[in-house]
Image 1 (tube, rainbow, N blue to C red):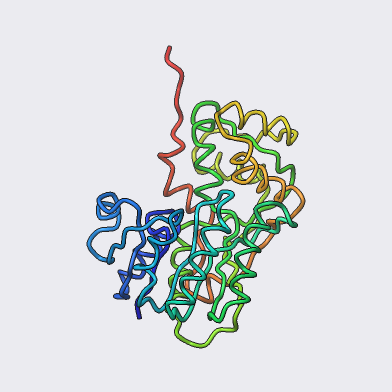
Image 2: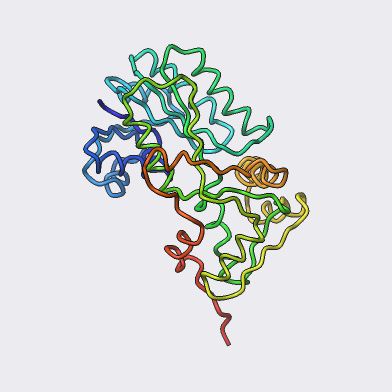
Amino acid sequence: MVVLVIGATGMFGSRVTAQLVAHGVPVRALVRDEARARTELGSGPELVVGDLDRPDTVDPAVRGADTVFLVTPMDTRIADRELAVIAKSERAGVRRVVKVHGAVRHDGDELEQLHQRSIAALRASGLDWVTVSPNSVMETSLFGQAGAIAGTGSMWGCADQGRVGLVAADDVGRAAAAVLTDERPLEPGTDFVITGPEALTMTQVAAVMSDVLGRSVTYQDLPLEKFRQILLSQGLSEQDAEIGVISHFRAWRRGGADIVTDTYRRLTGSEPTSLRQWLAAHRADFAWERPEQ
């Protein structure tokens, strides 16, 4: 069995690759920069250079692959990239596609529409396919706030009292690897929803941070449009601000991320990483920057 990992140097792809290599599974990694990938991924995976925005370059990667792990950058080209991979996988005789979707309920917004185009293509294909759907990830949700937390002791958002079952990226990688190596027949369209052990408001997240970091961290909730303007002032485009940040906070605010499952435990036999455990491991990333006297 050869597993092709799309986006092998990305947040999920790199972790899945490491897990599969550690378990002796033959891995083919689709990468754009071979030198960078060899440095980051080591000698374990077979590297194939390709670019999802140049679909013809993907053909050598899917040829001979049994299973494809499909995750693409979170922008407006999600569907275009994934539809090309799905079509090529079907023609190449791939057996199973494991697509990263997302547990958060986006209620038909632009991001959800892009993912649903891919899912519709999978449903219409002759492929065996399932989805791995993480709740919002600790790394993407909190590392972006690290500078503000370190400098001011505050983080910002527009989630109000919405709860989110934040999940560690390492846990997503372990769970996805378990799905990829499960050779039992799976019901097409099975959705493996991966979450952390509890759903917290951002105010509660700040309280846990305060306890773990040993100093006060507060959460400042803003009107959605004011928060958008802050993101734009930091150099994000309208589309990147909407798809990458605002759409998630909007979903949190209306209760779309208040999801906790036992899927990670069932797949791995281990307990999911708590926010407290994750923060303890990443304490240095939120280190206090005291102003110069």
